[in-house]
Length: 42
Image 1 (cartoon, rainbow, N blue to C red):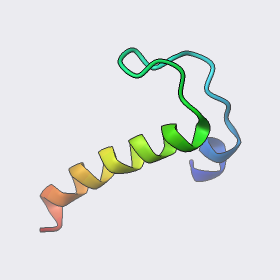
Image 2 (image 1 turned 135 degrees about the vertical axis):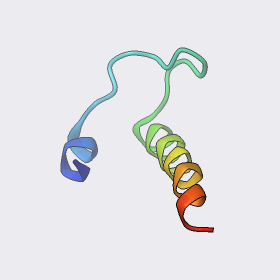
Image 3 (image 1 turned 30 degrees about the vertical axis):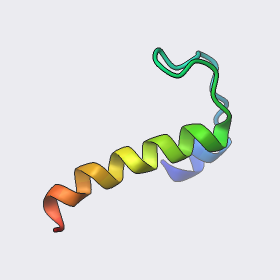
Image 4 (image 1 turned 90 degrees about the vertical axis):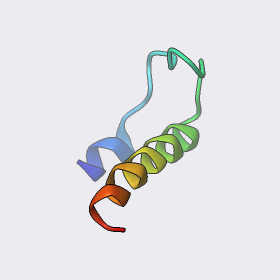
């Protein structure tokens, strides 16, 4: 999954944030994952 994401290009704009760079997209989703993991690992 990590390889796939690192090579993938974002084609569609984000509904709320519009056009995002690959780095911005990765940061957004990493923060989202961090939030979910914080429920399992206090």
